[in-house]
Length: 585
Image (cartoon, rainbow, N blue to C red):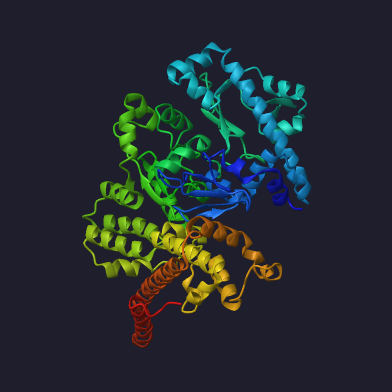
């Protein structure tokens, strides 16, 4: 038995999902409101018997692991670790080489949890710390508890001594980033600082940011946990554990520079706000946020550092499929200052962002003299360097036109300059980003519904005949199509099921889909539904392929254009047959 199977044996899917949605019994199954859309009637179906779920509103489905991945924004490994903790499964026994790391990681997490409580206790005992947190920063007790804010006493090794008495070694505390060596002996990493715990998306403390309380010459204002087994500055998103639910509901995330900006925003009820380490936003940060939402809004200072940050992040956003925009702070130096003055202005600011590249263009327009040749050259150098990194050719073409109008030069001249410099290699977009396209999402939904019918009702399989593997956009859909085409008499016997082992989970989901949507229909109604879905799949395939042909024609020579036109005519003919009702089963 592997780790996944042991976890599934110890946890039931209904118990896991009930932590996220309210379940109601529906015969042998359960129903719930979809967490992926704003709906008033339940469309999420859970089958305890099959241990799978399917959401009819979004077309998503799978097992308990895929659901937790969706809800928590975790990768497979992180989800497995989370569910293993719930199930009481020791993953180290399944890991050949990293068992030691798994045990050390658990020890470091335990040390951080005790350190957090230690710091919280000392906050209540230090008048200066109390004054700073509750009076100067105007943080209320509820917010301080939510973010677990504390205070590190300024007496050398108080935390280190405390944790060593609890059974931790000096080496473990050094590896946790809680202790260092001063004058040859273990000493606290943080002293005399307001402590803000850094937590992972599940709320587990993995590090700290310490804000100095007294004015100490040459001491850094903020001190962060160094890189450890738990904490990676380039991956950590501060406040995500408290923000992820609101991010999913509002369908956008706000990223600010400072942790205290996050705390202030959450205190006034604007809770879809997180922070990275200043303006040092990485591709990992964007990928983490993209697991929840693809609308990311940055609130960076409109100074040289903020502009430089935008130039760095726009290409990363394009590569990860994130729609990036910039929030302008009216009449304040940062979100915290604006929130203290008027929380409504902060809410209004985040609701009216400007698309990032448009914002960048406006910033350089105001800083350069575009009536001069040097100004035009510098402007085009900077903006085209960013445009060159965009993954979408249509978006590139749009901004060539925009820059051309601003500078009064032709798009052709800019296009020549755009390709003059060698392009760096670009990574292909992840297949996970396909659902960003509404047409793709609807196509996936249609093919799932169609395949549920032909899988569960063998006499509907003639409807497969006019279709091809290429017409299915998901790998598992095309695999099932190929299997059913080659095995038209498939009835689900154990011998036959062997050919479906790679997509067994998908077939279970389709069975649940059929049970919920179609099991009560008469034979004639099932045939009508299969025919309707078949036509829809062909129509969307034709639309998709004609779009691809149109793009190729833009760059084709005369001979290639003729071939492409013939392909387009063939697609038109297929579409005509479909619309006239001559392509069915």
